[in-house]
Structure formats: structure tokens, C-alpha cells
Length: 64
Picture (cartoon, rainbow, N blue to C red):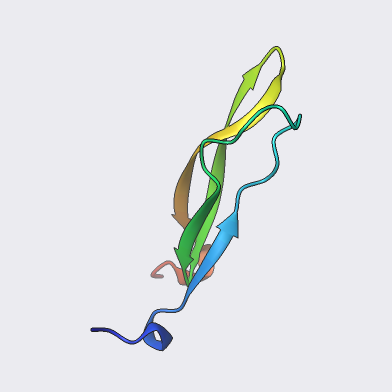
């Protein structure tokens, strides 16, 4: 079993949809240090909501 202190995780909550009656298909994402979330949005006539995500590494964490 690995220690969480060696690989700290954080929970990133999805942004709210544009209208309260719309519901995101993703609520939150666990990210490690050096990772960020790119939210994917779906737009409809009623508004927009988060329908997916992509985890990307931050530039400071990329090898040089």
C-alpha cells in the first residue's frame, strides 16, 4: 500500500452549468500534483454543461 503523502491528490470540482436545471455529467476529478483539468462543455439551446474532461500535465511538471 502506498502512502498518500508520496502522491498527494486533490479533488477539482466541475464548474456549474449555465442554468440550474442542466446537470453536469462529471462532478469532480481527482488530480495528482502537476496535473490540471481541461473541462469539455456541451452547448444546447437551453445552456451549457460539463460533459467531459481531460487531465493535462502542467508545464512546470514537464521534462525539459
